[in-house]
Image (cartoon, rainbow, N blue to C red):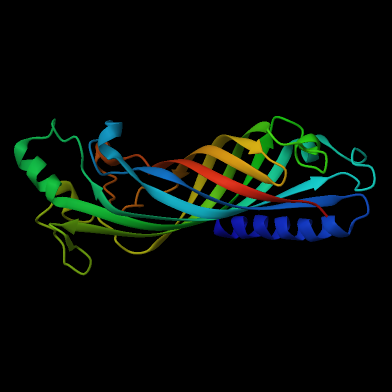
Length: 265
């Protein structure tokens, strides 16, 4: 999967350069930055209780957009449905959730509840990925020399991301890294063979929806994204034999961004 993402990125860059030298094609380039609230759904908390395993934190990043136009001499000539509605996006983001906790433990027995309350986690994530975004309003109208301020363009997108994650688990603020198993201060299912605190690379799939608000050379973006990780070890907990921890980790990311539109080449 990592090789596939690299190949897609290479194709994107080569297409950008080749598009710039072809007589019938021009390319628009855009650079942006974004920040927002990322909510992790992990094995912390109670299985099936979204609120108890929902860990929110801040995240921020940068993005690059590329779009193909038709002829730069006749702006409608050579255009296609793809060029009129799709953009390719590359992005890099950073997230550091320094205190993941078990929450809403009212349904847990008093002995387990006290043990779980002493247990916290953290995860640092560097994300890089590609996505393809579909815009409902034709981009030749929205992103061109003829654009006007105040335009709104909704979009949806699908993508792939690679995450470098560094997890940690703490008991009373003391890290379990380097400590031998079994971890007797944890509840039984986490004591042995169920914690992996090594740095890891994880692939994920994303689905997003949002709106662009256009000014003359700048767009403001509001986006909501769902991210499904192809792993259940993002935060370091992994107990596949426990029915309550069989699902992979996920994340919901609500973000605001600003994008500078360079225009046509």
